[in-house]
Length: 334
Figure (cartoon, rainbow, N blue to C red):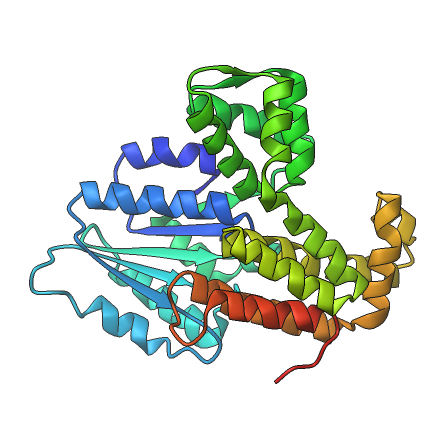
């Protein structure tokens, strides 16, 4: 069964499925869908949870071994598998299909993946998991949809806002759902139950230091490593959360890869980068970086995401973000 995130809560009220696949590139919505599955599982007495990060060269035998390794004190178990690369490979596909035969009300699988393309959605392993599970497809929130999404968030926080105020926030966050969500939470604390006016929204967003993360992106695109490092350190000191910084950098890497592909198809840069002031920055970055370099930056970004989620104690997320920033600026470091 395939559903969207808005349908998940209602679906869970009907009972737990043995398998849930959460697929998409919007970290906030993916995380909230996972939280919803986990909390529902706890209500159904699923008392044990095991988290597995299936990185490159992962031993998929671990998954099947985990299925048979129940705690003496847990009657039910949830195994959460995160596949940052999105492609489990032949061994992973086989292991997931074998697990699907074992999954039941006492042994649940929560599989978290980036957005699956058409060929992946039609692959055998996805279809096998879907037969007894639920696939939640998380789609990006477009610029046109952003005001509606913000209004829904405000309503959930028991707030309302003037249309112009909503538009101000939508333009300021530039698609960053996590930043928008945190801004709504800040408005809720400062103005409980009130209608947010244009003046209140302008004061809120202009006093919010987190938006300088977009200045960081522009500085990285220009290749100014010294200024980028200074800006990154300023974000850290001001208490900006690493996931916000990582989201912005990762989105820009993916955007550059997409632009690179379309330029090869003959499309003009002016059509691909609508904001005129950003065109020189994007052009400079594309001249400095090759496709393989951008792809390697994505691999590093996935490792930082793992560190943020507690999957690796070897490196601080901020250390990883520093290295990623320098590499993105074109600096080679050990």
